[in-house]
Amino acid sequence: LAMASVGAGDMVTTLNSSSQFGLGLIWVFVVGLILKYGLTEAIARLQLTGSRTFLSHPTDLGGRFLPAVFLGIVLLVGFFYGSGLTAITTLTMQALIPGLPYWPTFVVIVASAVVLIGIGRYNIVESSMLGFGVLMFFGMIWIAVASAKVNGASQAAVETIAPTLPPGSFITVLSLIGGVGGAVGIIAYAYWI
Image (cartoon, rainbow, N blue to C red; front, side, top):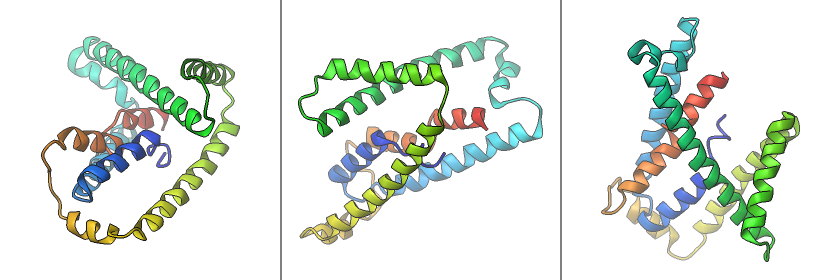
């Protein structure tokens, strides 16, 4: 679950935020991790103390209305998340294989995802994702070490390490907290667990 919660979009967001604001937003990760830990712990306790899932509790507050609203929100977020993830995957494929047309590649990725879901065999995908997760971890370590050798990188890190909220960083802070902490993924994890 930990590897699944750090995706390509999160890495792009963190790299863009650090290029714009330095290390001044590193405090956002601490806030996001505390938020994620607190929410996950609360949802786990709620589910372990009763015979109902987390998603069945909103019916106590608003009958069938809140779950219907929640379903609409999840479908909308799922649509945008799926579109964004497919777009990122398509752009990654275009970077790896120059000359690939965008829309046909997009359609092939969506079709392969539909086939994978239809077949329902995830063992190979899970094993490969574990390998890619390890590769991603070591790749990020390599990038950190390589960037530390760049002239002026250590100086820039020292100058920007103080926690700040620079002008124009509010959307970036929200996206970083959502990527690290309080995202829809927590509800999905609670459902799967």
